[in-house]
Amino acid sequence: MEETLSNNNEQKKSIFSKINGVVALIMAIASVILGYFWYLSIPLGVVALIASIKKIKETGKTLPKAAMIISVIGIVHCVMVYVSVFFMIYSSMGI
Image (tube, rainbow, N blue to C red):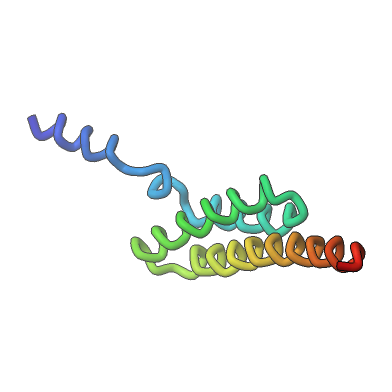
């Protein structure tokens, strides 16, 4: 009986709790590198941010903190690239 309860608890864990700090860091670095492709950078950055926040709450180690900082940098980089492209196009129209 106790074994089935523990199996149910293990199955209820979200995918973010299964991601360790190294994977979150790799996804965060990929988010920064792929900053010019919003359809890759934003999802990778958000998933790395959520996973690193959950890992910080669980362990408090520095690797998830680094992943959190780098994922925020990746998201901001992507947003800044597309905002600047929008303003360049808008300013070239002469409106």
